[in-house]
Length: 254
Figure 1 (cartoon, helix red, strand yellow):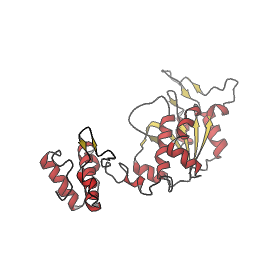
Figure 2 (cartoon, helix red, strand yellow):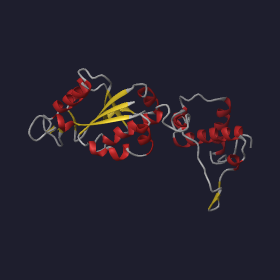
Figure 3 (cartoon, helix red, strand yellow):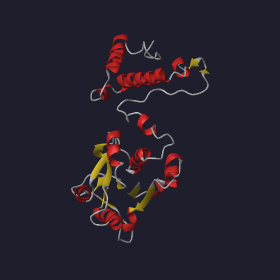
Figure 4 (cartoon, one colour):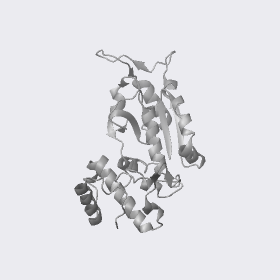
């Protein structure tokens, strides 16, 4: 999968892209990220990419000319792939949205900055607007990295465990179950017995139950559209009747 990132601050990206899973994905040839500095397409002597907004008000607005020139100079006119603007006004990035975007072999990302970006970029160049949450950051560079990261995890062959991405929180529609590793006893806190039992069916049921419990406690709205089995419904009813804390580490058979 290829990303073309258009930013005023491309120097933000390399340290993260050269680490961990993203670095490995690039070495494997499954991920390519090309960084493009929008300032390089500014035609004036000082490479100005922002101006005060018409009508007054605080802050500066990114000019349309360098953004259009950069994107069309790399991707053609019209662009050969979707062009995504990272903005707090966009559609919220969810796992479901990520699953649809990973179907593309190439995506362009425009990282906004300053007060905003000229509306004509939104209307005539960008094909999608995406937000990573209901808050405002200094620029779109961090959100762009978030988008690249989440999509890279979904590229087949990138993760060591082929099913790892499917087990992540939100991938199935539920929050992920708790994880434990050695030592078995740390400061008197013991790994749940069921995880040490070697009984895979009980472990699977325990993990499912813990995902249900965690989702009920932290993101109950996710259960609204989730397809629950009869066993799931029975367990959730027990949690509600017991106040959710009474079944913390018990497998379904206990």
